[in-house]
Image (cartoon, rainbow, N blue to C red; front, side, top):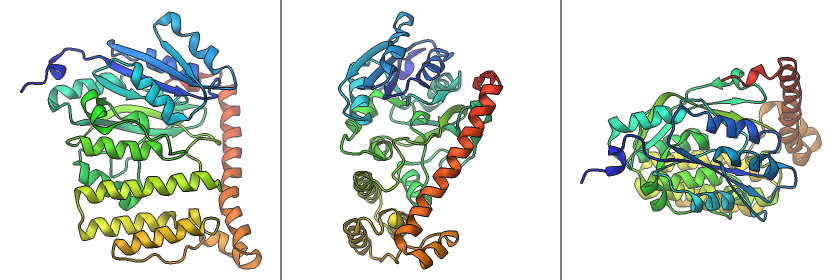
Length: 346
């Protein structure tokens, strides 16, 4: 049966923006959504009970056709579910409140739909990290930057611990409905788990070169686990779901090996604070027909562990990169201010 949605000249695209304490970045994000060269779009912002002026910033765009809703603080996943409940689009564009879309991102992906002719195909795009100056973003291709089946995409993700940024996807309403809502239990990696289900509901990924997303990397992001007990628990839950999704598609020797590699890579995140999660990881590895080796700190932190013990060694592993990141951000912010915001030009 022909797909009437894909036969439309310009299907409606819903750009959905969850926001929490994002007053510093939200305006630039919304401007990147409003500035899309693709015309048939709606923009919905859901403020998740922010304590700063995020809601006021969001409401300042209402006169330009942006829909704004608010809710008590219940998390990013709940805010995304709320935004989706308010939208009417044939296709969904998720956009975090501190990230940016290149002006033709959506237009390029909608144009690619004409060649795909299948609303169960996912559209993905390039993405690059930046701090304050998106024109300095680095776009580094990975093994996911190509057309892939759901099985191959998930296999590569787990085998090399890769990801695609949330805003890279353009997803049909049919696939979105089939995948179900965002999981509000997940304090971290809710996007990773959600797009596993999106992939399961799809018939594959079509990568659209030159469609770009600018991913702001900042301290204090929701994706940062650190030594948070609750976030560790959420990360392990998401990992179990990832493994379950991939094995539901293929339960071969190569898949089990990729799952073991994935578990081994995260074991240090849980050790030694969460021995329960370490034990659960080992049991899951045994179910996969393998075993995990004891985690080791990277070589430049091993001497700290040997001299001062695991706790201080791991603290250094967690905190020193964060300190370096703070220094890089301060430098980038200074250059951004000296540049008179010219760095915002995409």
